[in-house]
Amino acid sequence: MCDLKPEASPDNGAWVKNATACWQLTRADHERCEITVLSLDGDARHDELLNELQKNSNNPAGLSSYLQKLGTKAMITNRSQSTPELAGALAEMPQVINSVDNFAVECVDRFLNAAPGGERFNDIEQASFVCQIGKTTGWLRMSYKVRDFLFILAIAPPNG
View (cartoon, rainbow, N blue to C red):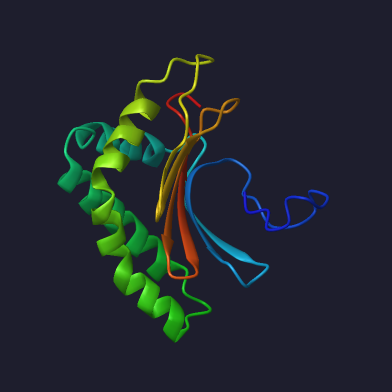
């Protein structure tokens, strides 16, 4: 869900019903977001994403490469409003993802090993990276800040 005015009523922003994984793109000075769905409830793509995360959960370089591939594919797929600023941010995104690869591995490991309904961990926050796991939903949310843009990967938990 993209709610760019969280203090207002929930009729702002956007959401995708039945999505189990997506990339979101927001910009600090815009009241809009883009959501690119990676998988829907009931489709095999969600399990494939989780399997790739599991496969790379102890491999910072492998996880970074996979996240870059997912992000690049999502942003290319949904490029209706491309600007020079966004192009620059997209060019820098791999470097930002690589710079926090150890934190991403820790984040993914905690997500994959979280007990359903169990205690959640404190968010991981770095200058260009925030990792959160929803306390109620168990959703993984990894945010990468590049220039004025936030690239956010959101994934439902296994069996979620």
